[in-house]
Image (cartoon, rainbow, N blue to C red):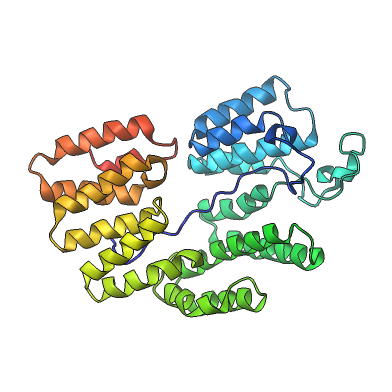
Length: 341
């Protein structure tokens, strides 16, 4: 159990159309049955998405280039979530170059009246960078992430004061997030600081956060600058073994965000170090009951099972009950072997 290193926050990337505009009243206006796909993704039903995409393809239900790209984004994301990385890469390989005229609205004026630009979902560009890393080719993936960052910044510079700037700013932080995590894994901390400083110089981070952000990077945390500010006090107390004060800070984090599983997990760790295993277990179990879709992650479950082993003679019964519950509610990509049953 690693109480000092919160896991990096995951950032959802809904593979919807790019860009979204006010002319659409529902997700289904963007692509065939997109609402259904989005609902399945929110529930972590990745296997159902794969089945739905394959069925739509076999029945020729996808009528526009945009439909095909949107469904491709969902199946690649689902296969990636299911750790079927080679299959996901094979799906991506079916595409031409993202800049091809085949993927531009103006190529099909009869279908997309008065629209121009790329119809490639941003999530596909992100997955294109992520998959080489998942397949063991870190450098290729990192190179692609830097190219994606250039693409995002080009959009920002070109759009000026356009209403889409806010979206592209979030995407810039999102891409930098992934790049920094890769450099952190290699302990290349000076590169991380340079990337953060670049965000600040571009006006995409509040300069008042720079100290907290740098502390997070130097502590080898997964980059999540919005949460660094909240977690920083707790980290200082935790490193100083002032666990009671750390618990108070994590309580504040949880009060602000009831789904902050990192704060929940670390509060339980602190209580364990205070020899209060009963409350430590209660914190984790309560979080699973309250927000199972968010709190249910492998790190938290591994820690809970370890606490069962410390607290109970017949811990196998507790872990078996937990494992059965996980089988009912967990998303398709959850690794149930972490219960060690």
